[in-house]
Image 1 (tube, rainbow, N blue to C red):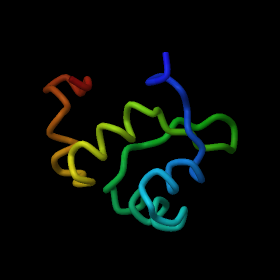
Image 2 (cartoon, one colour):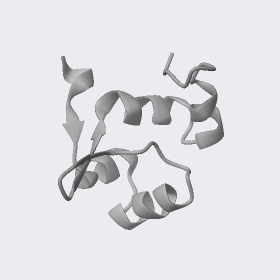
Image 3 (cartoon, rainbow, N blue to C red):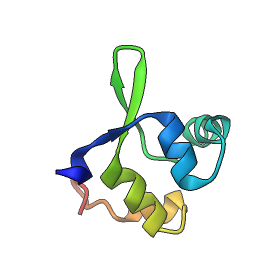
Image 4 (cartoon, one colour):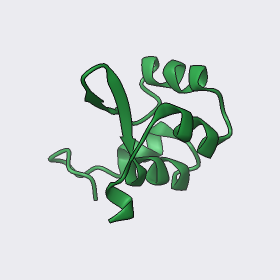
Length: 73
């Protein structure tokens, strides 16, 4: 399924029209979905990036999409 595909940071940055450095800054500030770590490589689920975009790139709204148990809706 395409929603389960993993994206490298370069693709995430291109999708969001920002630099890779911006993604790293957002991660450090807790403003971006956490990636999956595969060894030394970071990857994001397409579904996580899309959900972030659907929330107008607002991490507070993105976090609100998680239920009380911490599972994504």
